Structures are given as C-alpha cells and as structure tokens.
Image 1 (cartoon, rainbow, N blue to C red):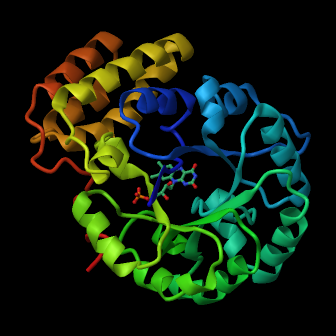
Image 2 (cartoon, rainbow, N blue to C red):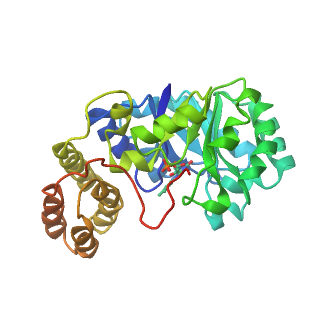
Length: 324
Ligand SMILES: Cc1cc2nc3c(=O)[nH]c(=O)nc-3n(C[C@H](O)[C@H](O)[C@H](O)COP(=O)(O)O)c2cc1C
C-alpha cells in the first residue's frame, strides 16, 4: 500500500519536507505544493529554492504544477526533468475562486472537452510520467462517474483522488463510495485522499475501497507527523518528537525567512500541531497574538508541556466526521 504526503501550500515547502523526512519518514514520497509557471516560462526564487527543492533529497519528491496551458505544462515537465525529478503531477483540485475562475485547479473539471483537449496535448509529449491530483467533481461529487471515464482513458502514472467536490472545499463528508464504484476502470494505480487522520480512518477506507493502491495524507500528518509511521505499524507519536520537529523547523526558517514572514509561517504550522495536545485552545489563541519571536517561543514551550491527546489526530470543531 503506497502512502504519500500530499501537497499543502503554505506548509509543506522544501524545508518542511526535508525536516519531516529526516525525523519521521513513514511515507513513500512527499508531494510539493503547486507551482505555477508564468507566461514567460521562468521559475521564481520562491518556486525553485523554497517550494520545489531545498536539499538533494527533495528531487525524490513529486513536483506539482498548476496550469491549464499545455505549452507551459510541457515546459515545466522538461524543467523538472532537468532538475532531476522523475514524475510531474497536475493539480486539478485547488478550490480557490481566483484559481478556478481562470479554469485552473478544480476549474479544469468544469469543461470536460477542454480537460480532454489538455490531456491529449500533454500525455504523449511529456518527458516525465504524468500523475493527476483531482477532486470528484466541481459542483457535485456525482460528476465523478463522467470524470473517472476521462482520466481512465489516459496512460497516467497514477491518480490521486480527493473524495470531495470543489464546492465542498475541505469540509464535510467525503465520498470514497463513489471512487470505489469506478476503481475497476483504471489500469494505473489510484490513491485515495481526504479525511484520513487515524488508523481507524485507514481501516474504514481499506474496507470500503477494495483495490485501492494507496492513500495520500495531508492535514492528518500536520497534526500527527508520525501518522505514516503509525499506519505502518510503528511507534505512536511522542510529545518530545513534536517539540523537536517544531524547533528544527523554526531554526531552518530563521535562516531562510525575514522576521516579518517567520511568525506567520510558524503559526500556519503550529495551528495544526496544537490539535495533538489536550486543552491547547488558550495557548494557541495567545500564540496567534504573539508579536515577538521570544514571546512565540515561550508559548510554544507551554504548548509542549501539555499532555498529548490520547488519539492525537487532526479534527475540526463543528464539522461532520468525513464519513457516516
Ligand atoms: C492549507 C492547504 C493547502 C493545500 N495546498 C494544496 C496544494 O498545493 N496542492 C494540492 O493538490 N492540494 C493542496 N491541498 C489539499 C490537500 O493536499 C488535501 O487534498 C486535502 O487537505 C484533503 O486531505 P486531508 O483531509 O487528508 O487533509 C491543500 C489543503 C490545505 C488545507
């Protein structure tokens, strides 16, 4: 069973992946957050040195591109190949209104003829194997019946399917049942994504997705960085592991980011980590108000002194569990 760490824009840049790989591992590969090639086909410093790569091991990661322009996709594929990557992933899942309005991300799922045209242009010409990360549909998850037939007609290296429509963004119930109904169509590996936060979730999904090749983890790992290891039968998360992970990230970002950006980046990370601790709410609120690094660090230490949740896993209050 393949386990991948999914892309999380704003969190899983090259530094996060490098530190996570060295301390936890537990997954077969890490996906990069999306990069968008500009019309003049150059990568920015942020794309190249921050998101795609950080150290040599990053070239084993799966770079993700977000574009609906076949020429730019192919330019990106050649560029990734030169850098040393061995797969290119297409983002067909980003739900942001500004992205979908341009027909990118999940916006690629609206016009099926245009999606086919795009795939026709890139599939044979790409120098790297192409994988796709998609949602079940744009307006409605039931659109999957049609979309599955489209993706199944191309020689993808693999397909990662987030079990929600674009309309659902990241909340509410997932529909692994719809994916299960179509698994026999595919001649390449299909991986399920969405709402897998604990070993119980994984058991449920394995039972309901017979024939699935693996899973893509995302928010679950941000709260419990040992989730991949745990799903593989390894040791549960220890409290000290989170504090060491956090400290290493902070030290690396201090070298890389200006002070003005540092606290913002660390808050994005710690807001997920905090969910692994009992009664974290008060400290987390103070962390969001902290103005200096010293203040932030002291509050982070307070957080690590709290007891871990019995089952440390990502959850959102006021949201349905991902499955009935
Ligand atoms: C803050 C945030 C950033 C994300 N960035 C990306 C991205 O760059 N590319 C992508 O394909 N998916 C992105 N996703 C989607 C996740 O990879 C994943 O599909 C989604 O969170 C559902 O999985 P989960 O329930 O296990 O978290 C992002 C999600 C969040 C919440």
